Amino acid sequence: MSSSDQNMKLAPRPRKGRAVMWLLIILSFSIVAATVLLSNDMRHLKSLAHYFRVELFLPPAPPPAPPPKTFRRTQPLSIDIPPRMFAQPQPALESAFLRTWRISGPAMCEALRSAGIEMSEWAETAFNSDTFECSYEHIYKKEKAHIVSSLFLVVRGNGRGTITSMRAKLVGPAVDGNGQLDASIMRMFETMLTQPAWLDFHEALSAIRNLKDAKEEGFGALINFTQEYSRHGSFNFTLQLQETSGQQRRTKDYFSPKTWLPAPDPSSQVPELIFWRRA
Image (cartoon, rainbow, N blue to C red; front, side, top):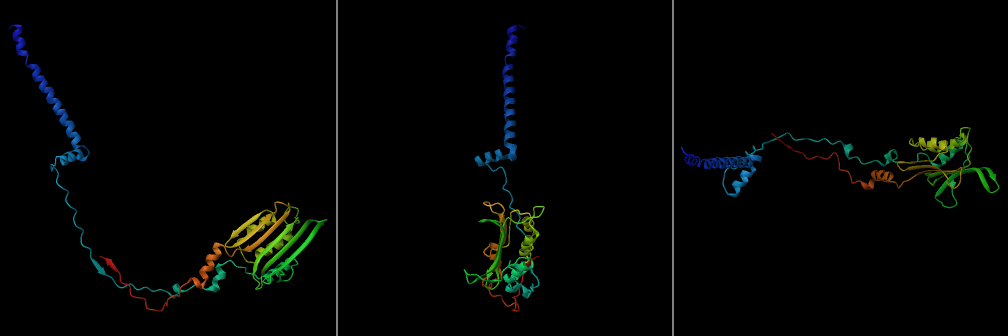
C-alpha cells in the first residue's frame, strides 16, 4: 500500500476528535450551569422559570387554621379592700416624715445655758416684731481696735417659738494641746446639734472639733462650718432648715389635705367582677 493510500484513510480522524472535544465542552458547560441553577436553594432556577413564566414548582400549601378558642366561666372574683387603703395622710403624722425643729427657741436657749453659755432671754428683736432670738457675745482678747479672740452666738426664730436658724462666729478660738477646739466651746456645738434630735450630722462634730471646714445637707437641713478666707482663725457656723427644698416641699404637699380628693366610702358595695379564663 502506497503512502498516498494511507493518508487518505487517516484524514477523517481530526473530525472525530473535534466532535469529542465539543461534546466535552457542552458537558462541562451543562454541569456548571446545573450547579449555578441548583445552588443557593435553586434561587437562580426559580428566577429563570419566573422570567419565562414556566411553573416548575407548586405553590406552598397554606398553614392549617388554628383551633377555635373555647372559654369557660369561672367563679366571680370577690375583692376585699381594707378601709386603710382609702385613708388619707394624717397631718398629725407630718412631723414623723418632715424635717422640723423638735425643740423650741426658748428651750434651746435654756439648753445652751446648761452647757455653760450665758444666753440672753428669748425676746422680740428691735428690727422685726415677729422675730425673736436669744444671743451671747463675749470678747476674750482685744488689741486696740483689733479683736484677737471672741465668740458670738445667736438662736433666731418667730413669736411662736419655732427656730429658724442658729449661727455662731469664732475668732481665734481656744484649742487644747492637740490643736482641737476647747471643750467648753465644743459643748456649745454639741448642744446645738444634739438638741434638735437629728441623727445624721454627727460627722460634722468631728470636723468642727478639728477646726476643719464642714458642709452637710440632708432633707432640708443645712449645716455649714467654714473658715473665712480673708481672715485666718475666724470661723462661721450656720444651722438652718431650708423649707423650700424639693424634699421638704414634696413631703408637705403629700400631707396637705388640699392635694387629695375626697376618699370614697369603703363600706359601700364593690361591684362584682367577673373574669373569663381560657380553657
